[in-house]
Length: 366
Ligand code: M6R
Image (cartoon, rainbow, N blue to C red; front, side, top):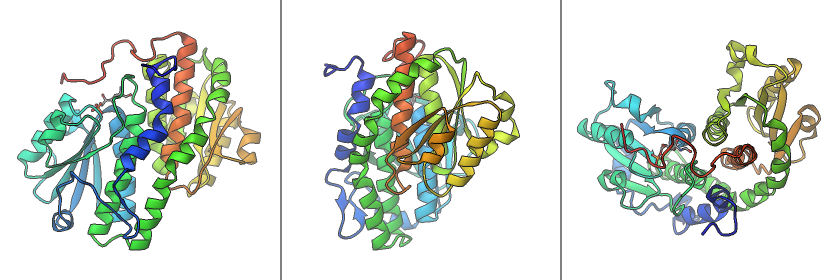
């Protein structure tokens, strides 16, 4: 049942190109630069009528939400707020009939997310869910659903569910942008073209597996890790840190690279590996100089950069080179080395990768 892989998690990591193809299947209207989301149940008029989006989730799904904020604000120019479900439901959120509330949940059974949705509905918001499990509680109670179609995810550490949530967010962004007239046909086509290339880019990124397996043993003694990224890739730093914490039990923190100078830089020494997400793109120079600051203080840098970036490779202790075919989908491709690093460190530490201590696949308690 693990298809020849040692753990479900590794199987699920390698399944990702297929999972993404399934998320996209039947939904692309490439000519029109638009997408068809069969269970969204929101008309163009309804999408035009909203004045804000609030995305609510927990854990890894919350990291996907943070990427969603970037995508929607960038392409649709609608203000997006992102909230952790257990925070949202215990305050007095500004939500009304003009709000669109999006819930992201792999299982569709997370108690806090479900309760947050009920609260949002009570306040009159339209609720759309991004779920993996068909007919789950959240999917059933939402006004509309975008299923991720990743297939069953057995490993407690979310991998393929996360990347397909990201794909679902790109698709939703296209739909929202097109329906509100904020995205041109050409812009829609360009974003579709970018997501269509994702499975092939992922196949390429998965070739890092051997390199990551070999280098993992150099980091087993670390007590703490820092993960740095900026912009759309900052949530991937958070996700990389969460993966490592969950399965290897090494303490890790994700930080926006620009925040380092406001505190965490004090932690840097030769004992703390720092994972720096520095692909080509808008924030490249800024992150590059953040990386240099880490190196200048004796930090050990594991850089994740674009293929052929010899400048980064010559500075970092390790460079993991990913194919970046434009920066638009970088968060998705960067997720792969994050998953592989956490996985191999954990395997070498001998932890129970698929069933880490104290954790459940779906958290149905509040
Ligand atoms: O099923 P959900 O997406 O609602 O689950 C949310 C979190 O419990 C989940 O993402 C958790 O953080 C994972 N173990 C992450 O790997």
